[in-house]
Image (cartoon, rainbow, N blue to C red; front, side, top):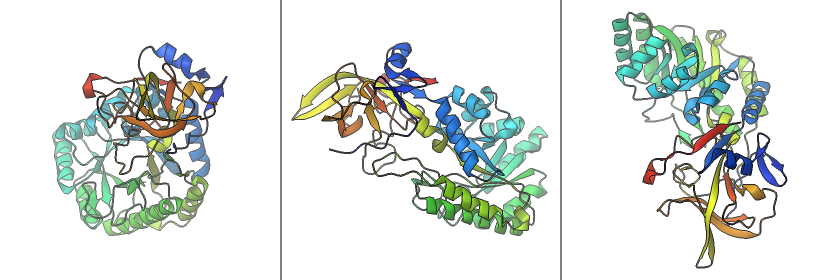
Length: 408
């Protein structure tokens, strides 16, 4: 038997069945029609942002990294909740503007921006987080050709990293950002060229559950920003401090201590160097805002036995939930939080493997999980599905197609 991950707090039951937004999963599946669905809770999104606002310093802005989930209704809802949006492609720029987001609230990072993407960003008035000397000069040329003043920040590849992060975005050789030693000269070049200097973007890593490591990294980011501002010879208008806040996916994972992070950051903000006193600060969060607010629901098509093991075969799978299958960056496969949704409060009584409908042994949603007895027609819920599910999974694989998405 292998344990499943912790079900996020905030979910309710109606008559023993998982309910989201006041509706049972049976009702939701009936309304959606055939096939799996992603269901997102607006209340959980609002509660997460409210908790952040209460714990973190008031002067710290909250940005949403839309790569985590670019579903249009989520972007529209987030527009009223957060201060800014971070994008990573021209396609995400179109999605953000299509959702009614003011381009002045958008920053654009990514190590491989095409000229057409740079042009669209400059025309729209988006802040470009510049990732190399070559990209800086291309952006300046494009601004000159448009007779426009580009808004440019420099993304820093710091010499340090976020300890224990799931994906390290800084420290050592990286395709992301500009090595910190090169930043002062490029900032002076940017300013001399007449571009609008929008500050620095320092993103060290993501998906960390180590509160101490996050506090340490944020302190290092602030110290580096002060040093770089001195070397540039100009006050820093804005500092994007990156993110890194993780969510518990697996058995044994524990949430970060948000209050401790907020208290440490408040202390830091109370002792800023003079060149950062008027700086605008923000953090950039994706999965921490939306990950736990989403559930993937899929129906059991078949129940079968093989060599003494039970298999629950669903109409979903890795083509919608690649991360839950263990094929999205994990070395050792572990179970996400999984439940039999229409028997949510029932006692576990059997060990079963939950698999998808694809013709590959990689298509597993839970291995040897202790679950209530389930049969054909029952509904499997995979939690922590609000981030990197619908858009980070190969929905075209074997011609399956995407799952429907709903925000309640």
